[in-house]
Image (cartoon, rainbow, N blue to C red; front, side, top):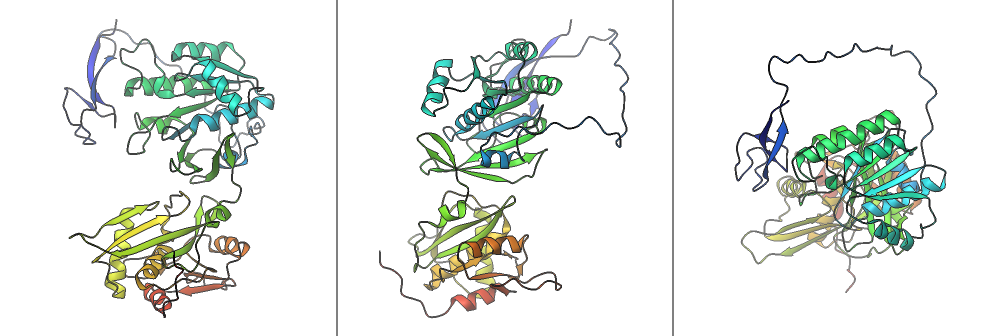
Length: 460
């Protein structure tokens, strides 16, 4: 019989140590190391069973005809997953508490059940009556979805083997446990082993496994990092708690594009699709106000126009304050340094506030030019024309670098009525500049455009 031993495992990063410590040496987190009992290998001298030889097939051999994807009918959800779900697919969705993870999965499962799929919803956090109450509130009580409330992985696996299921939802993986492991649910060992067993049986029987994952206070998925490597698709639900819009973002997808987003609005009847987020984002934009610029961004394969707001005010502190919502703080510091060193602008004695309106979080470097335009406008008081958009990456030398999918950004801007786009120069000399493009090579060219006589701003 295999002997058991104790390891001390960090619940944040999964690092293993031989003794307990108050601080993890790998991730520098405090009070996250927990003792867990693990099974060691077989004793010495015991003969181990040999494995069987694998049967390898040629890469050029065509298998059976691939099965079509399962579409939920929720266009934004299908877009993020790459066109729908696949047999044996393992999907992990994470997000802050109350952001809508369980709601969107319940809506998707009920839609698939109405299309004839056999779906099960297993919850370790809610009772069956609580799930029924949520389904009734969303108007989905007539869907034939099998409900169960348990945290025992062994029971779930037995049900998947004996039942004829097409899809099963596990809400959440941190509440699942295997009774042979002497550790509490939510620990690294339990999460890793439970997910591994569920994914294994799902791949074996062709069952889609949708896992709900909790996140840490830093916004990362709780549990071992290997969990994200085990699944096929990882989705993050983003959004401000006091804001109605939610962003479903794909950060990993073996069956479709990554960095794709779906936009939803939280309503009384659940999450409602937003087919054109650009119009929603710009609907409440104030014109004739300094510090406002429109960014033509690319999220996945979709162009999105968002408003960038900047405010520059005199500071009363020894160190000026820098506050950012929806963008990277380090990139803002870099952009301010470029504007001061290459263009002679002074932000050292002013507080700088930056906001991406609409609750979106922009991650692409092509937002640099729009951020710079908003900062220059806020500093000089010049009001940017309401029919102008910006996009482009700014280098440390002040050069404006090209961005991808320039034509797609301009097409979206024209559709919404914009007439001018300040953008990088075209890297390919064989292509003509699209109509309405105003290319610039250096950030000083942008400063020269925005240092005209200030227009009168609207009084609030």
